Image 1: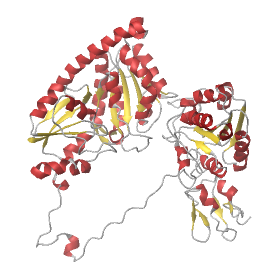
Image 2 (image 1 turned 180 degrees about the vertical axis):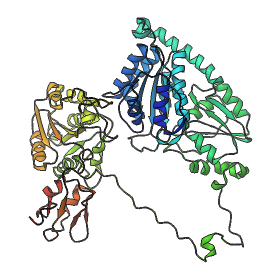
Image 3 (image 1 turned 45 degrees about the vertical axis):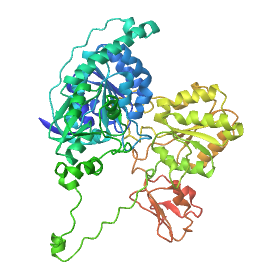
Image 4 (image 1 turned 60 degrees about the horizontal axis):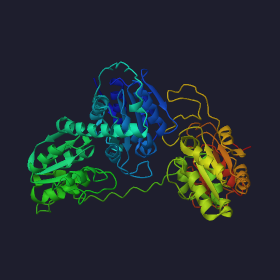
Length: 609
């Protein structure tokens, strides 16, 4: 049976069919749907871990214990998990272990573009790059086999376009893989220096065996066509090459590390001109050039943003079209010059000319109507504070009209950055600095930063925006929600108790929608002579949408001051005379009512009261 699946769901299906028993992840676009799908298979234990390091460590324990295991994360999550990953490459596995790295060329939902194939090379582990959902499923299943055959973790590298694009997938049955015996082996799994030296030798021996495998695996294949032009490519870039340049010969590398050096050499010398097309860094190109082979790559193909068929046509395709236009897809060739015959088509036949389509207006990212974070950033801007921000939908507090965030580096960095600002500029400056972090991100990697503030005598203030979910990636649960990835009840982490246990004595809990209470708490805690925490609490507006009613504007009372527009709420607009609230978008938070100086904003239905 065939089914239309996005890459992430195909991966989950392949892992399930391969006999996966344990999976762990921290939600992060474009990887989130993998664990959500796996949680629906009763044979698989799937969890949301507090962070990616823990997720990989859970998978390591499961694999050493004899069960096939998987850890999934977005590209920057591998940064968090890199510590156990590098040692895992030494210890190897018992049962198969697959690490999914979902890279995000184009920064659709990330703070950077990074090419995680380099992690595979640094750790000396295999890296597989699928080019469609069927390949995602097939390579996932193969990755477990390779992991056990070569005693190594295997990286499966997706990109956003593969993770979230649909293609047909042939479904199969689950293979029940017996639990492997657990054997106590300190020399293999306890990385004392003496043991580590010997395991490094095992890594090198494994690398040579993998290089031999790379030459014969069907993952790497040559598609001969016109031999005047050859292209070496991998992942989704293969699809762009096939669409833009259907007539060229192609070497498709499904195993992008280690490289099949002989296969590549034979291919390069088998064509007249060879190009390398890959997204982001010249990972393949640099290694191919190191072999002394003449290829062209990043001189033409950009190393920023995601690629497309059009980009390939305008770069490599333009070079090919100069001498062999028949190798380029006709739709990507330059339009022919106008002839005496004149234009054809329905518009021309009617004596009309096509008008250019006007560009779509820009739509800046905004917090949702009723978002509990909005009022907090309104207060922080009003108080002119320096805000060290973090990763979450609240990062939009940096955008107009709020403009209330100074920094955002990575998950959990708000506390360390705030601490650094304080130590650089002194105690007086500390009273103008606040760190802002979400509940899920605090549990991910914020607790250690808060402990540092307490231990090293900070006078700073941390604001935890507790909306009771991991909102940015689609409302996944975390240890503070009281539910697991399978939506079963679980112990609920108590944020107030945690921060007190970390040594914070000053803790306030306030309602996000109560601007007066928020401002009072912020003023008090930023003046305090010791570290303090404000937990600002309200559920995500998308979870409780439609439960509070909406607000409206009394036109005769409105001064036209536009103060309410400073909130940046999508439900608010101005018609040139007075403010207007869209009742469909309004989520009834009432924050706009609190900033209106003329009491022109009231609850809908109160007009006639």
